[in-house]
Image (cartoon, rainbow, N blue to C red; front, side):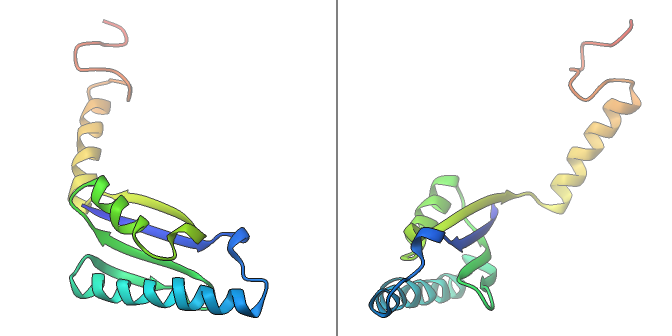
Length: 122
C-alpha cells in the first residue's frame, strides 16, 4: 500500500541559538536526509522528498502494513520535531471500483447508507 507522508517543522522545534541550529542540522536533518536517500534507493520512498525553501518533507512511501509505515516514519531522526500527517492512498482502479458500486446502488434507488436488503419505500 502507498501512503502520502507530510512532515512540517513544529513551531516548538525552531532553533533559537546557533548551538541549537548546529545540533538540529547535525543530529536530525542530515541523518534524516541520509535515511531518506536509503529508503528511496530501496524503492520504499517512491516520489517526493525535502521541501524547497522550508523545513519539511513530503513523499509517497510504500509499506505493507500501517504498523510498518509507523515504524519507518517514527524512525526518521527528525520525526520528534515534526508535525506529521500520514494519508493512506488507494489506487485509481480501486477508487473507480468503489464509485461503480456506489453508482449501482444509486441507480437502484438506494441512498448511500442503505444496505442491499433495505429500501426507502417498498
